[in-house]
Amino acid sequence: MSVKLENENIIVKISEMGAELTSVTRRDTGLEYMWTADPNFWGRHAPNLFPIVGRLKGDRYKYRDKTYFMTQHGFARDNEFDLVEKTSTMARLRLVDSEETQSIYPFHFQFDIIYRLTDQDMLGITYVVTNTDTHDIYFSVGGHPGFRVPLEEGEKFTDYYVNVDPTRKYSRSKLVGPYLDNNLDTTFNSDIPLRLRYDDYKNDAIILRLDSNPVSVVLAKLHESHGITMHVQDAKYLGIWTPYGKDAPFVCLEPWWGIADTVDADGIINHKYAINNLAPAQTFTGSYSLSFF
Image (cartoon, rainbow, N blue to C red):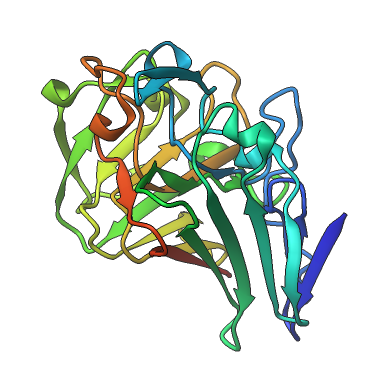
């Protein structure tokens, strides 16, 4: 089932499966900004990542001496959320633990995703994780929205760029296979806009360490007036990704509160690098917003 939000300028559609953002169009231009989920390239639009971001070593982890198995990016994206609150410009969707989730993630939780259109035509996305258990829970969460590039016919992927503000030198994390190797950190200089080139993604995503500092990210065509701006409030990382070797007509901008296992991870969930832990009855909130021009 699709949930629709709208105001005078923007129409937004969200699937209850995974609480996934599937469509954003402007009324004045009819321009569709979200990736179409063509399975020949990548069969998703904007999955929400929970309770892990990235991959676990061997797709497994240990908690209280028991081994659990979980695939890349967790299970939220493949579960039906309940629509618990709705207006014309806001929707709150919710996933709670079940027998099925507890077989791979032995924690009681409530995971809400709130979408809100503002008067400024900005779409806010907020993640709210609540610990409904009697002990600490451990988790990561993140966004993975994909945007059409190019946005209009006659344009090329390489006509577009990504700009990260504030302009400075960011620490860039690198993956070895699917795992993080902190010994390979380099520098990403955002003084120079990142021109989109497929070869830059040969070794997976470009990953910037944000250290919970706010950033704005612009995805747009050079010298033109259409694109997307992402405002990230407090994420630990930002991923920029398109599948290598496919010449795919989209790119993802991914705010993460967590990251893949390190190459030397011991597999114990509470030891996991950049994991979040939450005490009973406490709530975690992470947010980002999108504007479409």
